[in-house]
Length: 518
Image 1 (cartoon, helix red, strand yellow):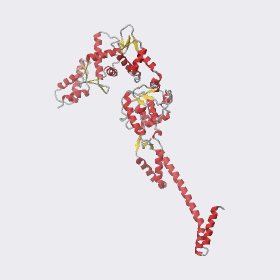
Image 2 (tube, rainbow, N blue to C red):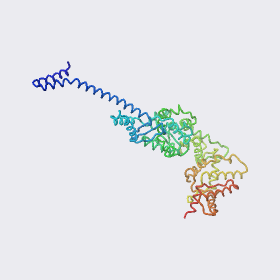
Image 3 (cartoon, one colour):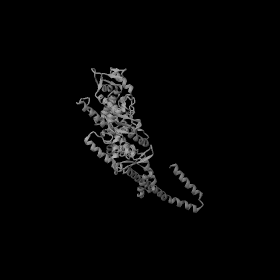
Image 4 (spheres, rainbow, N blue to C red):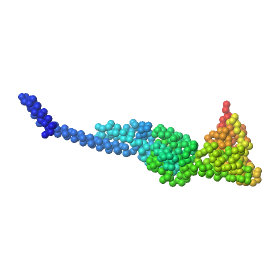
């Protein structure tokens, strides 16, 4: 017999002794003891029923929770900013922020529709929220529709190929997930340096602002837009189009979370950007572009540039240092690489490679380049025909400058009576002339890479053409009608002079409004 049984017997015996002379109380004792088996059976049954109900509720609540979490839409959480997100593969397949109340409403509505779960209504609601908070936004797997739409936003607008866009996204994913492995780095595991075109600054800066807001991570710690004495082998050149975009404008504005989720997905899918480059990239041109500096050490790059210059030992052709810096800019533009040397460092390296350098003349003697004839013609054209007056609000568009130069160049060819290699049209593009102006005449204000401010040309009385047209208009009219009349007149003049230029509507309205001010 156990101590417990002895204890129970002792209690009954004590009660029996206590009430031995009291028939009423002894009867109560007998009655209670007689009912004890039924009471114990009922208590045992109630316990079993309660346990069964609990098991049923647990099973039903678990099934409900799993069903809710796995059905559309999917909910995620970002602990960094304490925000909930929703993603609906059955609808538009885009990620967006959602309020906690907007999640609670469907949870409670569905529980209320199931009488079995009602006793645990708020317990189940809290469990669902806890489970959602354990689902990091960056672990979600985007649907193919989301991935393809993201790639289509980036390519071909910002990237010429889908592999370029995938690499960019994988890089962003690496940064967000704080991956730092770089094979072939200078020392151990370091963060790669991703160098992008300066025109991408606004777009990447916008992405970075949103990335800081959502994940507390800045992309600007990884992306650079100028080269600053970095180790070549640690650098990766982003193969991006040279265009300016705003991350907070369409089509990106409402898809930024999509970009980050696809980026994190790619980073985990491909391991990291380096692995994507070595194992997944099929775009040979992009592969070479990204690893350009890795595969081209500093001395080799200088030698490659020097090879673009042509020895001219039997002539007095020289390349001044200013012209040499321009040729270097042309070279890095053609190679599509950043300026990797400061001016003095570049000069020191070139002096070592080219022994014909004269410190007195500050020039490299008996040397020429295929680009120098254009430089000479450009400077001659500028000094002979271009007027820069800070007090004059006139302007030339870069395409107008190019057209005027070509006219001038054509006139020289006609006067010479023959076309020589030196007089042939070579690289007469807006971009080429913009580069020449910014290098040789940096004091000229250039707006939006298009407008040369406070600049006019003696070959074209631009303002005069507009004023003459306004005077010829017989009746007062709107700027649109006046411009229409002006264009008609200029087209008539074009028949006799095919080089005649027509001003833009923007410039015409500027003069029109100035003339009609009260």
